[in-house]
Amino acid sequence: MTNSHGPLAGVRVIEAGSMYAAPTAGRMLRDFGAEVIKVEDPTSGDFARQWQPAHEGMAIGFARLNSGKRSVGLDLRRTEGRDILKRLVAGADVFIENFRPGRMEAWGMSYDELKATNPGLVMTRVSGFGQTGPYRERPGFGTVAETAGRTRRRPLPRSASPTPSRASPRRTAPRWRCSTAAAPASAARSTSRSTSR
Picture 1 (cartoon, helix red, strand yellow):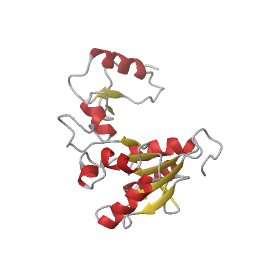
Picture 2: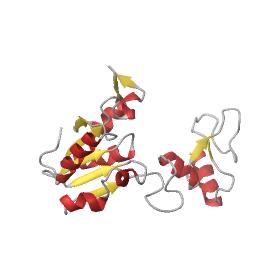
Picture 3: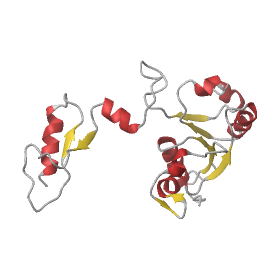
Picture 4: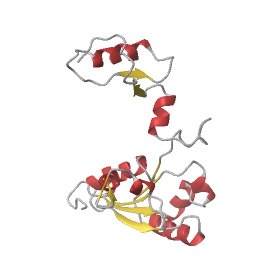
């Protein structure tokens, strides 16, 4: 349900996003009262619909990120689907997309092209490594960026012992280590503190 009394009541958002990042942004706007229309592939929908666990055929994670949104199936590979999306965006306040950089431009829907028909449009673009820069062409999710930025941690195998080991034998706190060999010393200190709680 849309919060019709929230601070964003009356704001229309078109979300052409899948998986996690863009739908999370859309969900936050919906939580504050915006009307969110989710654009999905008409045959397979958002891949998040296949996540597990599921309840009565609905992926729980998908339901959490997309509850209260309206949905429309558009094949954006076809001119007709792109034309419908352009009409939706022309009447919207916000457009969120998370295609690979350059995809919207190839479809004739760059920010400059969209704002020509909707000058007040706010466009949010979500991608693994941004729209510009040396890694822009690389696919990516949050976990990829976290690992590349050396902020991602992974659990130790059960057979390995944590270093240093300060954990009480009665506690079953997770044991973590940095996923890269060149982790800063501060990360190692914070890891050892977290295992001692």
